[in-house]
Image: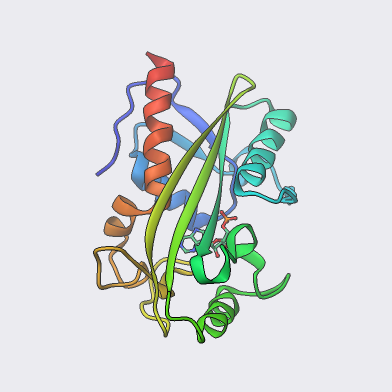
Length: 202
Ligand code: IMP
């Protein structure tokens, strides 16, 4: 269900080039708010993600847009945190199997490392950094679940085919996008972002 915003400030930049994320956020927020991606504002830089935490990386991305374009913006960073792996891949989720790796390699690495463990509990955690007029705010969303033994489902992206959220039988990649978007880590963090924007604009 989309969140409806009554704010007069109707546009904001989402500091990402990930089309999946843009679509997810747009469908979560609804069409009353115009969300531009990096390409839409003419930003083709590869923004460095050199921090050691999700908070740090989302902040770096949002700061980059504010410092270089002077636009209100937000950025997110997400990690899959697996208990038996001490929280890995965590902040290294995107390139867990190597610099040029694809999602399939990342998932295979995780499944290989988890083979010896009974406990397959994991969580997706998203941190959103919002910058409004130069001031920065953070919002977090967490969804708990389990890593299954084989990849299942063809929707979504990233680690979706191996993650089953608590209370469901299907992986994120096996459920319809509307269901994922109503329960996901990003949906929860985005709900907090939207609440804040509504307060800010009151
Ligand atoms: P990012 O840095 O926020 O883009 O996320 C880091 C990595 O986490 C991505 O490259 C994906 O592999 C993974 N990831 C982020 N969000 C999701 C999701 O909703 N489902 C599955 N994997 C995700």
